[in-house]
Length: 103
Length: 133
Image (cartoon, rainbow over all chains, first blue to last red; front, side):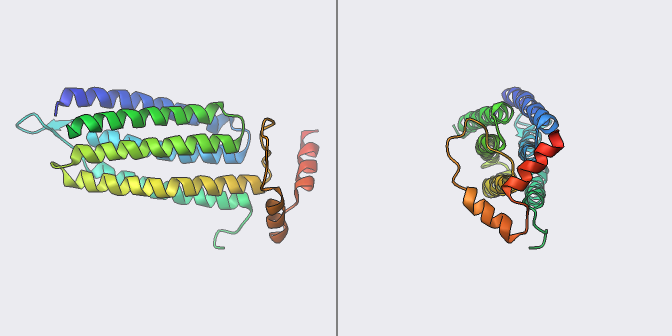
Protein backbone atom coordinates (compact mmCIF):
# COMPACT_ATOMS: atom_id res chain seq x y z
CA UNK A 1 0.00 0.00 0.00
CA UNK A 2 1.31 3.42 -0.93
CA UNK A 3 1.19 5.86 2.00
CA UNK A 4 1.29 8.94 -0.30
CA UNK A 5 -1.75 7.81 -2.34
CA UNK A 6 -3.65 7.02 0.84
CA UNK A 7 -2.81 10.43 2.30
CA UNK A 8 -4.03 12.15 -0.90
CA UNK A 9 -7.37 10.33 -0.70
CA UNK A 10 -7.71 11.22 2.97
CA UNK A 11 -7.01 14.90 2.29
CA UNK A 12 -9.81 14.91 -0.30
CA UNK A 13 -12.03 13.11 2.22
CA UNK A 14 -11.30 15.73 4.87
CA UNK A 15 -12.28 18.56 2.49
CA UNK A 16 -15.50 16.82 1.37
CA UNK A 17 -16.58 15.98 4.92
CA UNK A 18 -15.84 19.53 6.08
CA UNK A 19 -17.95 20.88 3.20
CA UNK A 20 -20.79 18.55 4.23
CA UNK A 21 -20.48 19.71 7.85
CA UNK A 22 -20.68 23.35 6.75
CA UNK A 23 -23.87 22.58 4.81
CA UNK A 24 -25.30 20.87 7.93
CA UNK A 25 -24.38 23.89 10.05
CA UNK A 26 -26.14 26.12 7.52
CA UNK A 27 -29.30 24.07 7.98
CA UNK A 28 -28.93 24.12 11.77
CA UNK A 29 -28.68 27.91 11.73
CA UNK A 30 -31.32 28.61 9.09
CA UNK A 31 -33.79 25.71 9.54
CA UNK A 32 -37.21 27.26 10.06
CA UNK A 33 -38.49 24.58 12.48
CA UNK A 34 -37.04 22.51 15.32
CA UNK A 35 -37.23 19.15 13.42
CA UNK A 36 -35.07 20.65 10.65
CA UNK A 37 -32.37 21.35 13.17
CA UNK A 38 -32.76 17.92 14.77
CA UNK A 39 -32.30 16.18 11.40
CA UNK A 40 -29.23 18.32 10.65
CA UNK A 41 -27.69 17.51 14.06
CA UNK A 42 -28.30 13.80 13.43
CA UNK A 43 -26.58 14.04 10.03
CA UNK A 44 -23.68 15.97 11.58
CA UNK A 45 -23.22 13.11 14.06
CA UNK A 46 -23.10 10.58 11.23
CA UNK A 47 -20.52 12.73 9.40
CA UNK A 48 -18.37 12.73 12.57
CA UNK A 49 -18.20 8.93 12.28
CA UNK A 50 -16.74 9.49 8.81
CA UNK A 51 -14.18 11.91 10.29
CA UNK A 52 -13.21 9.21 12.80
CA UNK A 53 -12.58 6.81 9.88
CA UNK A 54 -10.34 9.39 8.19
CA UNK A 55 -8.36 9.92 11.39
CA UNK A 56 -8.06 6.14 11.90
CA UNK A 57 -6.58 5.69 8.42
CA UNK A 58 -4.27 8.74 8.42
CA UNK A 59 -0.70 7.42 7.82
CA UNK A 60 1.22 9.23 10.58
CA UNK A 61 3.50 6.25 11.11
CA UNK A 62 4.89 3.64 8.75
CA UNK A 63 6.64 0.37 9.56
CA UNK A 64 10.05 -0.73 8.25
CA UNK A 65 8.61 -1.76 4.84
CA UNK A 66 6.86 1.61 4.30
CA UNK A 67 3.39 0.22 5.07
CA UNK A 68 1.15 2.65 7.01
CA UNK A 69 0.21 1.74 10.58
CA UNK A 70 -3.41 2.56 11.40
CA UNK A 71 -4.80 4.10 14.59
CA UNK A 72 -7.62 1.65 15.29
CA UNK A 73 -8.60 3.33 18.60
CA UNK A 74 -10.37 6.02 16.56
CA UNK A 75 -12.88 3.36 15.50
CA UNK A 76 -13.86 2.90 19.16
CA UNK A 77 -14.66 6.63 19.23
CA UNK A 78 -16.70 6.16 16.03
CA UNK A 79 -18.80 3.38 17.58
CA UNK A 80 -19.41 5.39 20.76
CA UNK A 81 -20.30 8.49 18.72
CA UNK A 82 -22.79 6.60 16.53
CA UNK A 83 -24.62 5.22 19.56
CA UNK A 84 -24.71 8.43 21.62
CA UNK A 85 -25.89 10.45 18.61
CA UNK A 86 -28.72 7.91 18.14
CA UNK A 87 -29.83 8.25 21.77
CA UNK A 88 -29.76 12.05 21.51
CA UNK A 89 -31.84 12.02 18.33
CA UNK A 90 -34.43 9.73 19.92
CA UNK A 91 -34.69 12.00 22.97
CA UNK A 92 -35.25 15.05 20.74
CA UNK A 93 -37.84 13.12 18.68
CA UNK A 94 -39.77 12.18 21.81
CA UNK A 95 -39.72 15.80 22.92
CA UNK A 96 -41.06 16.90 19.52
CA UNK A 97 -43.82 14.30 19.69
CA UNK A 98 -44.92 15.59 23.09
CA UNK A 99 -44.27 12.38 25.02
CA UNK A 100 -42.49 11.86 28.32
CA UNK A 101 -39.01 10.35 28.11
CA UNK A 102 -39.74 7.10 29.96
CA UNK A 103 -42.92 6.05 28.15
CA UNK B 1 -6.72 -5.79 -5.39
CA UNK B 2 -8.54 -5.42 -2.06
CA UNK B 3 -6.93 -1.99 -1.61
CA UNK B 4 -8.16 -0.81 -5.01
CA UNK B 5 -11.69 -1.87 -4.07
CA UNK B 6 -11.32 -0.08 -0.73
CA UNK B 7 -10.19 3.15 -2.45
CA UNK B 8 -13.20 3.07 -4.79
CA UNK B 9 -15.69 2.26 -2.01
CA UNK B 10 -14.26 5.11 0.07
CA UNK B 11 -14.57 7.59 -2.82
CA UNK B 12 -18.15 6.59 -3.67
CA UNK B 13 -19.07 6.88 0.01
CA UNK B 14 -17.68 10.41 0.09
CA UNK B 15 -19.73 11.35 -2.98
CA UNK B 16 -22.89 10.02 -1.31
CA UNK B 17 -22.15 12.02 1.86
CA UNK B 18 -21.70 15.26 -0.08
CA UNK B 19 -24.88 14.73 -2.14
CA UNK B 20 -26.86 13.99 1.01
CA UNK B 21 -25.69 17.24 2.60
CA UNK B 22 -26.58 19.20 -0.54
CA UNK B 23 -30.05 17.63 -0.36
CA UNK B 24 -30.29 18.74 3.28
CA UNK B 25 -29.81 22.35 2.21
CA UNK B 26 -31.79 22.48 -1.04
CA UNK B 27 -35.01 20.49 -0.52
CA UNK B 28 -38.23 22.29 0.48
CA UNK B 29 -39.51 20.74 3.77
CA UNK B 30 -38.45 18.64 6.77
CA UNK B 31 -39.68 15.32 5.40
CA UNK B 32 -37.86 15.70 2.06
CA UNK B 33 -34.72 16.87 3.79
CA UNK B 34 -34.75 14.02 6.30
CA UNK B 35 -35.36 11.51 3.52
CA UNK B 36 -32.54 12.74 1.26
CA UNK B 37 -30.02 13.36 4.00
CA UNK B 38 -30.64 10.18 5.97
CA UNK B 39 -30.59 7.78 3.04
CA UNK B 40 -27.54 9.25 1.33
CA UNK B 41 -25.48 9.94 4.44
CA UNK B 42 -26.24 6.56 6.03
CA UNK B 43 -25.19 4.70 2.91
CA UNK B 44 -22.15 6.93 2.37
CA UNK B 45 -20.91 6.56 5.94
CA UNK B 46 -21.49 2.81 5.80
CA UNK B 47 -19.37 2.65 2.64
CA UNK B 48 -16.61 4.72 4.29
CA UNK B 49 -16.66 2.38 7.29
CA UNK B 50 -16.59 -0.70 5.05
CA UNK B 51 -13.61 0.75 3.17
CA UNK B 52 -11.85 1.39 6.48
CA UNK B 53 -12.51 -2.21 7.45
CA UNK B 54 -11.12 -3.39 4.09
CA UNK B 55 -7.92 -1.37 4.64
CA UNK B 56 -7.46 -3.27 7.90
CA UNK B 57 -8.26 -6.71 6.39
CA UNK B 58 -5.33 -9.06 6.78
CA UNK B 59 -2.98 -6.64 8.56
CA UNK B 60 -4.96 -4.93 11.33
CA UNK B 61 -7.87 -7.12 12.48
CA UNK B 62 -8.92 -4.70 15.22
CA UNK B 63 -9.62 -2.02 12.57
CA UNK B 64 -11.52 -4.58 10.47
CA UNK B 65 -13.80 -5.82 13.27
CA UNK B 66 -14.52 -2.33 14.65
CA UNK B 67 -15.27 -0.98 11.17
CA UNK B 68 -17.79 -3.75 10.46
CA UNK B 69 -19.45 -3.34 13.89
CA UNK B 70 -19.71 0.44 13.44
CA UNK B 71 -21.17 0.03 9.92
CA UNK B 72 -23.81 -2.26 11.39
CA UNK B 73 -24.66 0.24 14.12
CA UNK B 74 -24.97 3.16 11.68
CA UNK B 75 -27.11 1.08 9.32
CA UNK B 76 -29.46 0.11 12.19
CA UNK B 77 -29.71 3.35 14.17
CA UNK B 78 -29.71 6.17 11.62
CA UNK B 79 -32.98 5.27 9.80
CA UNK B 80 -34.73 4.62 13.13
CA UNK B 81 -33.70 8.05 14.40
CA UNK B 82 -34.84 9.79 11.22
CA UNK B 83 -38.19 7.96 11.31
CA UNK B 84 -38.74 9.05 14.92
CA UNK B 85 -37.87 12.68 14.11
CA UNK B 86 -40.20 12.77 11.08
CA UNK B 87 -43.07 11.27 13.08
CA UNK B 88 -42.45 13.78 15.85
CA UNK B 89 -42.34 16.58 13.30
CA UNK B 90 -45.69 15.55 11.80
CA UNK B 91 -47.40 15.15 15.17
CA UNK B 92 -46.04 18.50 16.37
CA UNK B 93 -47.66 20.06 13.28
CA UNK B 94 -44.88 20.94 10.83
CA UNK B 95 -46.65 21.51 7.49
CA UNK B 96 -45.78 19.70 4.24
CA UNK B 97 -44.27 21.67 1.37
CA UNK B 98 -46.72 23.30 -1.03
CA UNK B 99 -45.66 20.99 -3.88
CA UNK B 100 -46.64 17.80 -1.97
CA UNK B 101 -49.33 15.71 -3.70
CA UNK B 102 -50.52 13.24 -1.05
CA UNK B 103 -50.76 13.07 2.74
CA UNK B 104 -51.96 9.72 4.11
CA UNK B 105 -51.06 10.26 7.79
CA UNK B 106 -53.63 13.01 8.54
CA UNK B 107 -56.29 10.94 10.34
CA UNK B 108 -53.90 8.72 12.27
CA UNK B 109 -51.93 11.78 13.43
CA UNK B 110 -55.15 13.39 14.65
CA UNK B 111 -56.00 10.21 16.61
CA UNK B 112 -52.56 10.19 18.19
CA UNK B 113 -52.93 13.86 19.16
CA UNK B 114 -56.31 13.06 20.75
CA UNK B 115 -54.82 10.15 22.73
CA UNK B 116 -52.08 12.35 24.16
CA UNK B 117 -54.24 15.45 24.82
CA UNK B 118 -52.23 17.54 22.37
CA UNK B 119 -53.94 20.46 20.62
CA UNK B 120 -55.39 19.47 17.23
CA UNK B 121 -54.29 20.76 13.85
CA UNK B 122 -56.81 23.64 13.68
CA UNK B 123 -55.89 24.96 17.12
CA UNK B 124 -52.21 24.85 16.24
CA UNK B 125 -52.78 26.67 12.97
CA UNK B 126 -54.74 29.41 14.73
CA UNK B 127 -51.97 29.74 17.32
CA UNK B 128 -49.27 30.15 14.69
CA UNK B 129 -51.41 32.68 12.81
CA UNK B 130 -51.87 34.63 16.04
CA UNK B 131 -48.12 34.54 16.70
CA UNK B 132 -47.39 35.84 13.23
CA UNK B 133 -49.77 38.79 13.49
